[in-house]
Length: 234
Figure 1 (cartoon, rainbow, N blue to C red):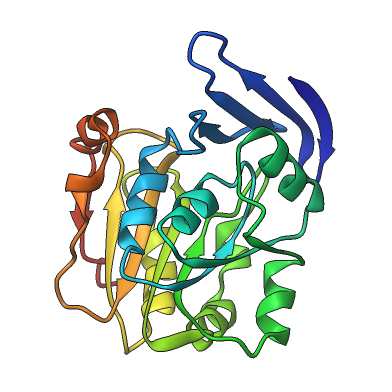
Figure 2 (figure 1 turned 30 degrees about the horizontal axis):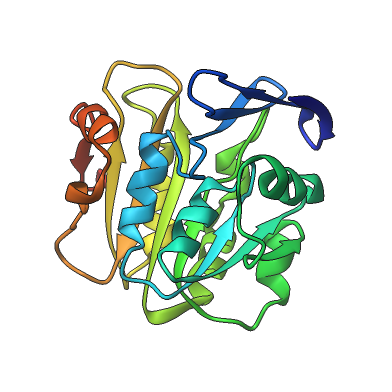
């Protein structure tokens, strides 16, 4: 459907003529996959959406095709979407059905955290791209700043890439995100797979409710290969 210049390389948008679903690639990264409804085809996006179902006011870091923002907004939530690449907002609205009622802020997410005085009862983190270093970008100070924007009953859902089964990065970031106030879990894609998604969940509750009953059938079937664990103690 088109080629555009993005922050991490050329953005390519492709439509499947048989289904109308659209894909968003930036550089070497497959960033978004959406049905014509604007709903994501990615399992981890549905998981993050369900982890935040109890929220009303969500800060979302990272746009791409805007599918998570769209799904949260259509649940009736106020969504503030932050991305340093303004073309993503335009592409999400024009090609991926993202509602224009979503508040879009062009900024580096660290700069936004440093200047905002707003508080949110939900934070969703879905940033990344070619050569993005999660360990460098989400150190202890950044994680403390994220917790500082939460309300007392707030919760966090974060997607990141896991290199291998013994990759310590998810556990290190989880410890800093949860601090001493929040309970935490790591929901991991199939073990043995390199460069896979994992979702960090931090919430005040002691028991994790995934809301799997709300997953579309295809997503629910794919989610059977995922596992839930507590962070490892190092």
